[in-house]
Image (tube, rainbow, N blue to C red; front, top):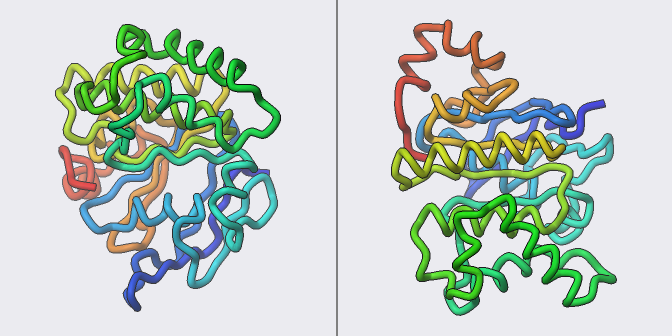
Length: 242
């Protein structure tokens, strides 16, 4: 049984079909990358999985159970955490406080337990350790991205949804972010990744899917996707917008 399965998923935005009959699977322990050009429906797909938008038709199954009608907070409790595009670090909170917010779905934890777990995140993200007491807005874009991912991991997800983690970052920082994605997978968290940098997105992936105007047009291993010259030129040749 796949950890996540989309069955003929369609999503409407103002009467426009942004996602059209998408079916895909993510197995436990995988990194799966979702690729496509601007407006292809990648971010909308993640928002549907996390309950931020409701499907017009089709189904979303997590661990064999439909979650298509559930509220976002219920989906988080089931084990899905969503790190959205744009990082969205709370500027008035410290880095540690931002990270601690990620555990808000987990009941029965004391503040000291949450703080201890937040401190453990600095082992995975050592570049932001020295900024633990600094306000979130003072960090660079790459550092804020690390805070956002650490906050998502504080929910202890079985599935982490990452939306454009390299967006707007310098190449050297992108390398660091994807090293973290590989480490997250090594530690046992399944990842569904939407990424504008196709080469980097596929470098950490077990499989990839390509969307075009809301429809799934291709899937396969990274090697299979790169070997398709037409697809590579259209979707994988360089950096594309989210």
